[in-house]
Length: 346
Ligand code: DAH
Image 1 (cartoon, protein in one colour):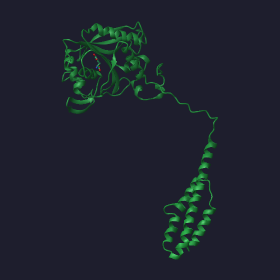
Image 2 (spheres, helix red, strand yellow; image 1 turned 180 degrees about the vertical axis):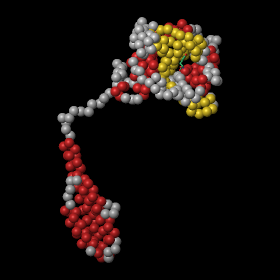
Image 3 (cartoon, rainbow, N blue to C red; image 1 turned 90 degrees about the horizontal axis):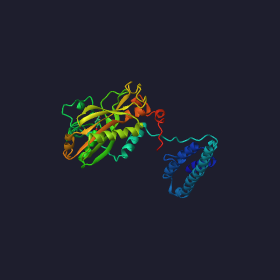
Image 4 (tube, rainbow, N blue to C red; image 1 turned 60 degrees about the vertical axis):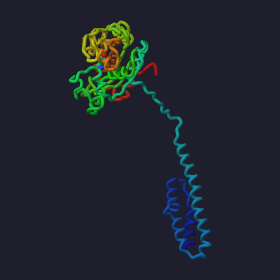
């Protein structure tokens, strides 16, 4: 009985031929699979009489080898034919797929430009965390307890009541000033770029996150004249010689006196345009002399040392430079927008 079956299957195996991988796979499952014919005949073999086993054993092993060899040799054939059909499809006359080189983000370009200008004046670069505590974002910077900037409207709070007050997303890079001053002693001369967050509805003119560059200079005998000259140099480098600046008195809790600095509009050169709202001037930063309370909060002797600080929005400067009117473009990742801004330096 078993001998007869094996003869039939042997004939089937001998007759089988294919160059197609899926047909070969069917063959493998039918004969060599875990529930296949080989497994069946070996199961049946267990039941035959001992005399028969002697002869049939050898026959069975040969039958198994036959199936395996057939599979191996056809596997080589099907693989070769798959490779050949791939090669047939290769058309070397088609145009190649070029690799497009990316471009720097316009905000990264402007940030680097700002950093390079201040590098020439000896400013280094420092960074701080985007998740901040109340102390570094507000209290150490002399914000009174009831200051409106601490309101839920402006600040994204994360957790109430940490070791150093509520945890929030930093609302400005001034927090990095505190971290820097706490960590050492003057002189400090550093630029602190980074992302900041405010709880504002997203529109063409406002976003819930944007970027700032903070500046800090603390040493003995630093005066308001140093602040003005430093920023004046910066503006000439950034917008070109002949750009006018003006300082308007202002208020920030962490500086005294405080000012806001305007530059003559780089687009209309002061004649008046949409960008400067027809005033001829655009505000680009806030600045002032570091309040002695802030120095003391950070463990620095305010009788011995004085300093100035400033903070500017990178988007604002990029908007003016590239005449971009919608803030949302910076974070939409539209390649058509992004690849317009090419830099000479990679
Ligand atoms: N932190 C201020 C803001 O986000 C900007 C600023 C103003 C920073 C005056 C300063 C400064 O360092 O002296 O609006």
